[in-house]
Length: 389
Ligand SMILES: [Zn+2]
Image: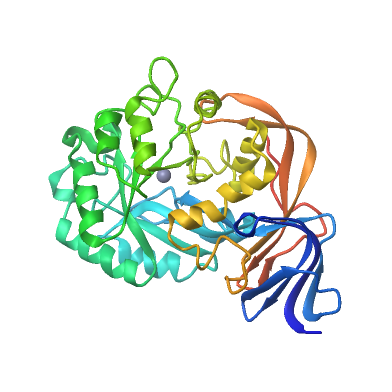
């Protein structure tokens, strides 16, 4: 018999890293996972009776905007809107901060949030609402490369973010993409590329991407995405898949279309992470939160273990943090999301403002972060906001 800090009893545990999907207990000690097993005779300081609930590794949202500062207005709060209050234990800020604002981002967001926050550093010094990369004045490669390398060593920076779209690149075309790739390679960090409307054209963008680089907004519903006129993946898309380029959803305000999703699924195009791109402009719909985005994947026909894998283990692997988060293997950080599915009729709207009726939705019951219970059910039963039009 052993004594633990926390015991979660009798949940359906889904942990793709260990191929676990069954009724088990989860034991936690000193902020880390002890194991997933039968701990019927063990004791704990806190016991959660989780019969009827599903337990997964803490959810990871690979694409959020949580820098709600003066320069990048439009972010959301890391804890109450993007993170632990919604079942998400790890968020990745996708380039809300460049080198010019990084210190404020670290001080006022990363260090003050309970939710684990990682980030991609914007290739531009001062990303703002206007064209983010549209001027030579907004780049300082030496500063960006040095900062990315230093902040990666601290475990915070995952790589460089660039928005490869006409709206963000202005008259510089492919040049910001080239600068981002150079900064990524010279700092030894990753690369996340926003897919938008040309210029630059997607063929040129993909050509600059290698194994492990992440293309975000992959199921965007515009001309000039990963699909050609015949609604099938471009040859350049398949070549990128072959090289090991990864695809991230990043739903957002204008970047997730049911139509594109079904064409991509029919073609067998892989997807590597479900994420929200949550910010001030979509938190009240159509995104709402991670759970709503995950419900859209159940609606599209992904089974629950696969939805969980794409929201835990797979993004952790893309981040190269799977030794810490994304699974319930012994020794991992004890980040756990406990939820149940409700049946009914849920209108879920994509980023093209197309609404489909889903028959299942997620309700988050508990969030456990590093072994601490940071969200639990209220008397109102349901802790998640209802989806409404
Ligand atoms: Zn974004």
